[in-house]
Length: 216
Picture 1 (cartoon, rainbow, N blue to C red):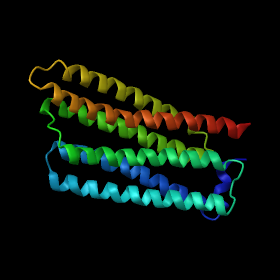
Picture 2: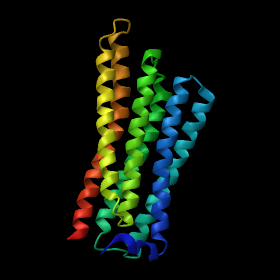
Picture 3: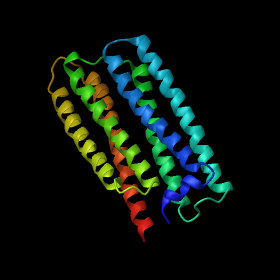
Picture 4: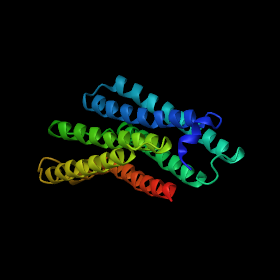
């Protein structure tokens, strides 16, 4: 049974769209937050941090509301577990964006200006993978033929993130003007930003499986 039936089930399709909007918005706020941090615009950065925290809380509320509706109203029982797992994985992405931005606020990493361009590129590509998985999820719930194309884009952006992160870490450890401790801190930031795209690809892999199960 296709997920297109969700639109007639107590507004569930609308709630799913609203939840996915929160994930997408978190990606946009993260991207903006990184740029503002590099510009040393602390006030504007703090605004984005507050916004992404609010978005994350709102996303949690919407996810719990959807889960409650799925259980109490016994909607789509044949596919409920897949939907619940997908929601949890998407929520993890949302939380990762918020947590990473908070890490900038907590640690206040001193990022050399020579790294700014690559770090912005890494953040943008990682968030492109988040946006691609949001579009993949929307296509999945609508039984859209565009699902496969969106999933492919998730993998593309994850691969691009790998290239940039490896390039950045190689350049980082070839510098002689930074302490090993400083290098380790910056490496952790690079790795964790790239890890968000890995998580997006993991969700895409699961979506592919769910789509196959739906056709059986």
